[in-house]
Length: 355
Image (cartoon, rainbow, N blue to C red; front, side, top):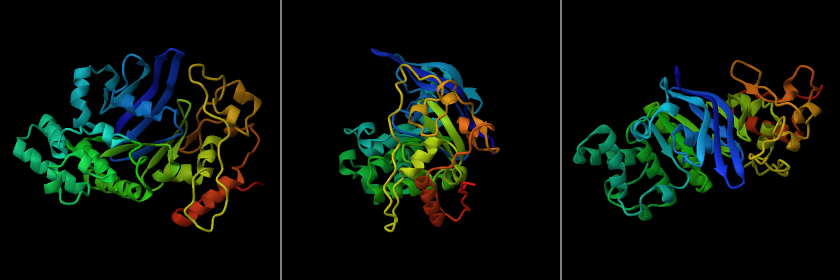
């Protein structure tokens, strides 16, 4: 398959009145061609900063890439000039933002906004660009595209505006599509349609996707692999089956336990993760999750855990995986959620019971 993107030891910070915020702290991951990687975590975990840094969209200043490499097709995007990145954005890497109304130009027809990208990167004449824009609107499921191509964003519903954003992102057949919380502002019915659309587009175009979200529930049917972020670091990474069916980090347990169930028979109260993420102007010593971790040991407050390897594809940064650590099982709320998941997905589920 081959790697399309490889992020190595990425560090990003922001200078603020309160001090330097260390938003991304040594993040490393890769993305294969045609693959979907979901990056999940609470607000403030660093996932959106990571995705915007890949696009080189963080404002400089106050933002700064302090360290690391972003290898895209073998070339380091960190070393690219702003002019070189202008060519890469849209042509090779497309991005779908959370709120289409702040991303679409309200004074321009939707078709013209799609055509701009096509004419800039594919050098097509205006007539051919319009035909391509209509084709893209049809691809993303907008009815009557010949009419809609001449309408303004305010004439579109919320779901249609998000589809239009996807059409713009796809206008130059990018190798990589970054979707930053693309369904958060939509109701659950439209959300499901957009997720299904992205899966369908990937099958048709072979585009690799990075899907940013705070909700583990939306990635179960979309992602191939999942990276869980907390306090600017990746704390667990694995295939979607490994993260959903055999999670190893207490933070991942908390995210899974807080997932709502659509099963009307499930009367269990949703769990929550106590406390709040740390202040990254002064990151804590040791494991940043330790103050919120009911299983934290003394070492968690003194030393940062490494990424322990569980399988060829599964890693987690928790001292609970050290050979000398006590055996700790996921809480009952997580086991219950995993059993519910096993009724919805055909793969065998792994729930480690206490011995």
